[in-house]
Length: 53
Image (cartoon, rainbow, N blue to C red; front, side, top):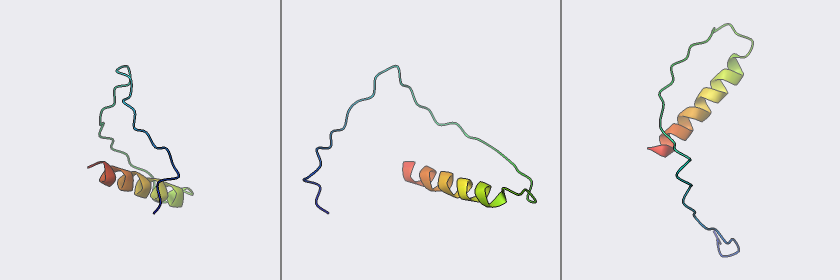
């Protein structure tokens, strides 16, 4: 990959921006019309979580 064409800079976030991990527990109705959307969202969150470790 050629990264030379991008001027990427990492900046320090301001001290007012404090982030912390929060564990979230959820459940849903398996017969929900939205089960495919829910499963997709859960999969995305699990993927994001694994990258943060």
